[in-house]
Image 1 (tube, rainbow, N blue to C red):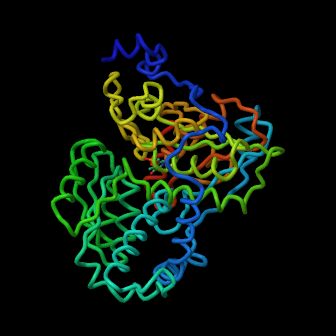
Image 2: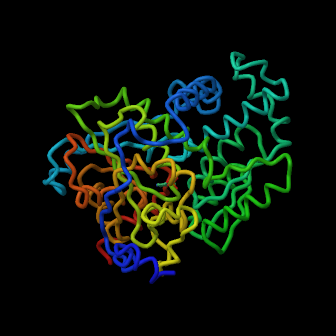
Image 3: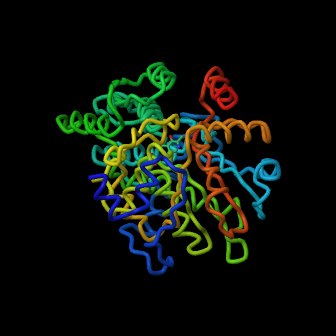
Length: 411
Ligand SMILES: *Cc1c(COP(=O)(O)O)cnc(C)c1O
């Protein structure tokens, strides 16, 4: 398969050598011509659903201001000046590393999907009389929800997000963790009443097992990271809220750099950004050189039917949140005409950026998040502002942080 792919798409030879590179998407169109299954109204629907749940979120998590799970946009021109002098405009960090509850971008999609499922169950069983009912009452129905299961397959962070909110509502929560998942994430989940099933295999297999186990139980709901429209829309809502954080228009074109695993989080955010800001935003995905599955899916158009292993890559990377050997087919098709490009970043560079960000700004983010910075060197676009989308970090334990920060010097 590898040699046939290379014959057809020569760039795959460089990808198979684990070269860092930038690929500009030839299928990208202007926003008005882009073909997508979902639209602007779907983002508004998701945003209004989240609003209905604000009182419940505020009750569960008093630290979450107004019950809105959102993050700040931080100017990091100190890092720009020291390490990316070629960048002309402002450099920002979108702080999903510190999203409350789950400590990563997954708090957007994961929590949204569990709340949507909860709303459906509650309406069906008369717990909620309608969507204008008081959603706070859901806190008093743990016994009801404990009869239902919520399951998910994950490299770590999606499991954290789905597991924590599900257990909070009262569900029996089961997370199927791939071998990439860090031990501290499994421990954290177990401490919060979530059942963790561990696999020796990769993400694609953990998801497959979870999906199969859930399908045998009519009271079980499976959050399907590879196909879920709900997760996707939960992520997309972030773009609507960004309107209040940054002025983006034809005079302030803005470029976004998003770390990509299976594609759900960056795909949903890309979709949202394009729906809201149209051609005034450029969106790029970052992937590890050893696991650039969305890149292969887009180049070949094979989407979910290709794996990085088909071209001899291991798929094993320190960017644990991005270790998905095959991309989502749904997301791959949905963003085909929207995405501006994809670039790849080697593992050692992750540690360099991690250290530079820490030295310049005193901010720590997960290695997976750091892949985004490579875009500032490889993409070279003309955006007036640049936003690095940090995707995880706040819950990483102190000893892990120190291990990561030491790594660049030692290697
Ligand atoms: C999940 C994750 C991503 C990417 O999201 P996908 O939906 O898998 O593409 C990026 N960074 C971190 C830290 C993550 O946990």
